[in-house]
Image 1 (cartoon, each protein chain N blue to C red):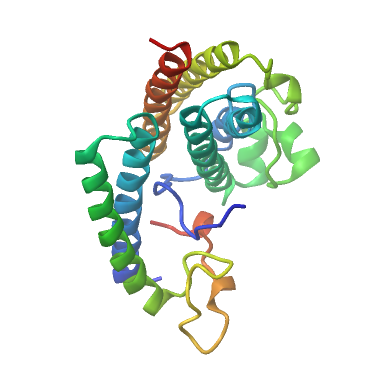
Image 2 (image 1 turned 180 degrees about the horizontal axis):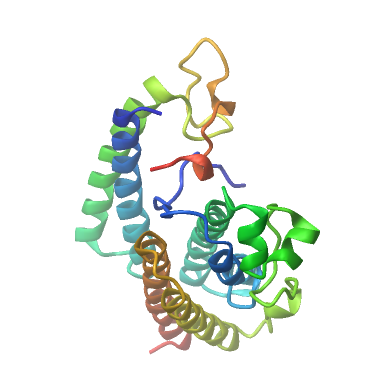
Amino acid sequence: MWLYEKKLQYPVRVSGPDPRMAKYVITQYGGPEGELSAALRYLNMRYSMPTDKAKGALTDIGTEEMAHMELVATLVYKLLDGASIEDIKAADAGGYFAEHDKALYWINSSGVPWAAAYVSATGDPIADMHENLAAEQKARAVYENLIKLTDDPQVKDVLRFLRQREVVHFQRFGEVLMDLQGP
Amino acid sequence: MDNSCYQLLFKIQQLSFTALELNLYLDTHPNDQQTLTMYNKVHRDLMRAVQEYEKYYGPLVNFGYSPASQNYWKWIEGPWPWEINY
């Protein structure tokens, strides 16, 4: 069971509409290293984990990733809010607009739709926990790339928060892995 | 949304982030007494801030975890989280 808290985990601010940045950032909504992939990867993996520590960490980090999906969605929503058709065409975001207007959709920054193949589950706890460690590092790298792609200090601020969370998750999953491997 | 609403919401965001971070740490360090004490303190501060917020601005959590303190169902009333201009 999940509850909805009517608040964002972290305030999302933008200086103004920027459909070009929206096109880049959306990869953390529906791309391979995005927050949907992360949430589903962790919550789905709980069922084949042998230890209480692993089940607990995957439940809580998977839940936090759902909150991150909401942060990225809000960022895309705000970057598109107030953008004119001319802005959208100038940002080469007309292809997205043609199919979705300003609705959100799970795609990467090149327009490829989300696929379950982004998520892995082998049933081997050691292999799966290594998968999570790699996923956190890849997500961190993508956030660093995104930070380089914007000059908006407010957009950078929320991207930095999300980047930092990947570092903490990597740390926690590392501790779960050490526990799984035993003394 | 008025200024004091944002301030209370920001305080809740800070406290619940602290609680989340301690929660993740406890997941892998379940016997850390100092962190358990910190978690319980943050829990109390968070519950106080949430109660104060809900008195004025309506339920923060759905499905029975927040009271309906107004004489109408304020839960559905905006701005929704993605609509707030901080």
